[in-house]
Length: 193
Image 1 (tube, one colour):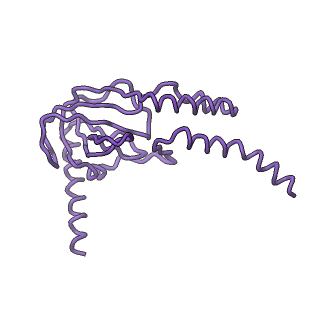
Image 2: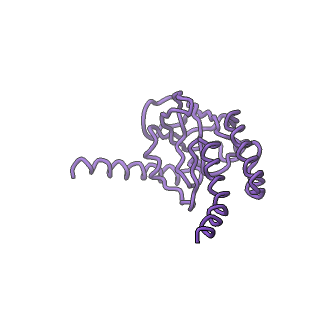
């Protein structure tokens, strides 16, 4: 019986080692989505400010440290015989995006500035090298700390869900405003319970 357990352990050791190695190599927060969720506009309540704006720049950020870790992980997968998984990873992919917005209207929150620059960090899907979405958008922003400890303004992104950068249409404005109002009412009701 011990021989079978030992053999089973050796057979399972390769995937376990690959998982352990991935934890060491990719120490950045990552999210493996077991299921992909529908966009929930209530997630906009996580923003400190929500604006209607015109996107004036979209600059992909390729972090050299993360790119090196990604290459090491890909090489480790190949060495362990996981060629299909290794081949599915690109050598170079966007780690985050710096975006600039010209504000048309502040839907909620403060401060009310004319322009915002924000970082979009995402772990759910691969980010594009260039923006192909709408120019006029609705976005939620919040203060955050980046992985180097520096303060940044970050676009909100619901985990395991579609892009939270919405086209600026009357329907989307109404839906976001209603979601923010509903969340505000829910939070206010906590005081009276």
